[in-house]
Amino acid sequence: MNILVVAPHPFLAPRGTPFSVYYRTLVMAEHGARVDVLTYGSGQDVDVPGVQVRRIPRLRALEPVPVGPSWQKALLDVLMVVWTIGLLLRHRYDAVHAHEEAVFWCRFLKPVFRFKLIYDMHSSLPQQLGNFGYTNSRLLIGMFRWLETTSLQAADVVVTICPALQDFAMAKGVLPRSLLLIENSIFDDVRLQRPAQAESGGSTHGAMPFAPDGRVILYAGTFEVYQGVELLVEAFAQVAGVVPDARLLLVGGSEEQVQRLRSLVATRRLSDKCQLTGQVPKAVAARFTRAASVLVSPRLHGSNTPLKIYEQLASGRPLVATRIDAHTQVLDDSVCWLVAPDPASFAAGLTAALTDRRAAEERSLNAAELYRRRYSRPVYEGKIRQLLELVG
Image (tube, rainbow, N blue to C red; front, side):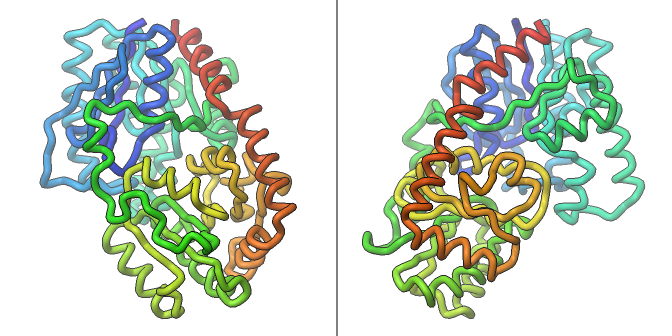
């Protein structure tokens, strides 16, 4: 089976995403599919038999491409449309696997080129426009809603990444037989053509920036407002007075976001107990995870499960997360500390995770078992096989 994956992202960005596209294509290729990936010009090429990465021209003036909707992505997507048509004219594809907004143009190309259309829905794009504060235009949001609804109806298979999106798609009229839930739950080592380059960069070079006798609370991810990193700092200010050897490590964020958080840390007089590394390679973040005492997901709102939750479940480390829909689709009180999204509640959860060793061990073991049973690689592979059968 020949599949064209249209992924409007920097694939793979040295310190970014989308790793979900990589894992989808990796497992499809392992199960016999011949995959072309059309993506942005920036990023690093993968080394996976059966996968060919094809890129639009790199426009460095538009980099870095920000997370979420942006004018940079809008311009790059114009080139993506042209290159999609070019590939469809030159090659015969059995299916087109459109990620996120790529479905908006692929749905119109489907009747012309007669391929099966897979819509890989990682979020509701009209909701993203509001969540990222990109626009309040009723006209633009309404147009995105129309495109999203008609794309869901045109797709032969809709892949969602969490139950909330699955329910959303069903409410839009997608039949259960055309709907497949495939969580972004695996995190194998990425096979890059130049792995040494991928490991370079990052000021810490993978060394934990605290003395080994400290207990480290680790946040790794983006620093967007909805992620709740400021809430985490405020909560840690309370924990630091109760658990003297507690330390906070914040990994990720743009330079501007890091500076803003560093100012908050200084205001709370936590500079000696809190470190911000900025963005680091994925392998370095994984080493931080293995060395941490407690992992956190302080997200404030949303319904899409954060990708890092699955790796946190499998890590063997206690986890503290906010009790919101994005988390409770996967987590419960048997596998982590679920707390209200406010500093006092989060501080109480952190303190318990740091000091109650028996509960921390029990919940960590339960979390690892949940991951093995519902989200591990064999489970993921089974769902990808279902996907290939649906479009075969």
